[in-house]
Image (cartoon, rainbow, N blue to C red; front, side):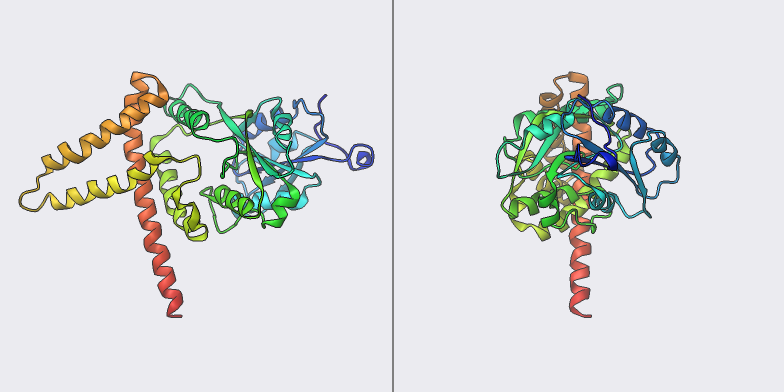
Length: 343
């Protein structure tokens, strides 16, 4: 049975159970596929779809309007966290399901998410990724890494979820204050919400069968800029949730040791100007082992020689980008803290 949108006149007979919220910003290239997929859900719970346009300048609104039963609202550009909160305020369902405008939910997406709420203590159910653009080498490698992490690292009850694919009880979302809009871009607002939900005593259930195909990044420079931003905002995340500095289930020791390794590399490069430490020493004893380490892990994750070598280099530059972002975040937040003291 498929439900797409329940009219207000029908609510007494079919009250809405799930509100699907989709934030959108200049999403004309993909939002149509998102909504088409939502219109074909095999779901026994009546649900509505709310698209919150975060100040798009393209024809996102025209495409959304072609789906007559989708609730559309526009706001001034304020970021995805704000857009999701806006959608949650309008939602009529007991459960809030979130996905993004560059994701294509599988037909059983809502049904699989709802099956995860089998235990009373479960306040959030998180799903996993598919891939919508496998023709891209970078996108394919990113997807394979995510899949490896989900299959090998994610426990049944993780302590973090991604905003691209999860469902939360509305009472839980409201009780913890929703998304923190201080995260102006997509940069850690989902982790923050995860930690708040766990701190309030709720559990997150990982449902790997609840899938959305995602358009993963295809341009290296853009991807590295995103990773810099994630590193930058991780400082605030750790500042707000210091207990999570040990990791959140999705990360593992490889991610942690990359930071000091980058620091060692940069320190070696600075010292290469000094007597006794040459640039060749830095290459041989720091950079080359670092690259080999990253390539080996890329090979494990991609299981393809060509992709592994390519993604190993991406891993290396990603580690640099994240660490620079993290260092910049520490510096900026420290400056802000000092400035606040002397106000």
